[in-house]
Image 1 (cartoon, rainbow, N blue to C red):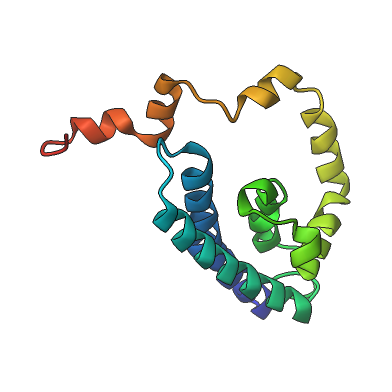
Image 2: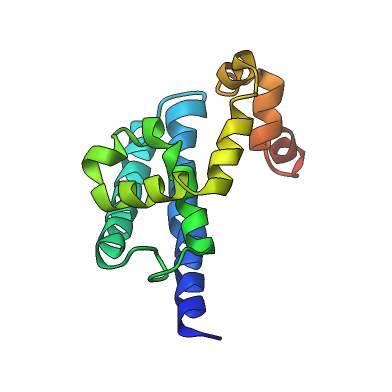
Length: 153
């Protein structure tokens, strides 16, 4: 295994073990939780902010997470582009190096083609994504499964 590949896998592991789950927790407690739980929002937001600073510092040292070449690790952080409203700040203002990476990815021809295809999705679907019915919420967050386990109420 080359050094670059090893570094890419390390950063990919960092994303799937930390950045991804923490941004998911913030998104859940800010957007989907049936009740606002300030402790959970504060806890996960602080941890996500810490991870964002780790990412920002790394991108201050190198062009891409694994070094000088685009890799799967960069693709793994791409969803941050859509998470800005959930994160509570504009990446362009708070995290300049991270914003630079996301803009570099956005300029890639394949991403441009995908973005063009995304624009073909009807507006009513895009607006509805954030509004889940009780059945959809249950399917997404496992309410039915949770209740089916013996001992759970």
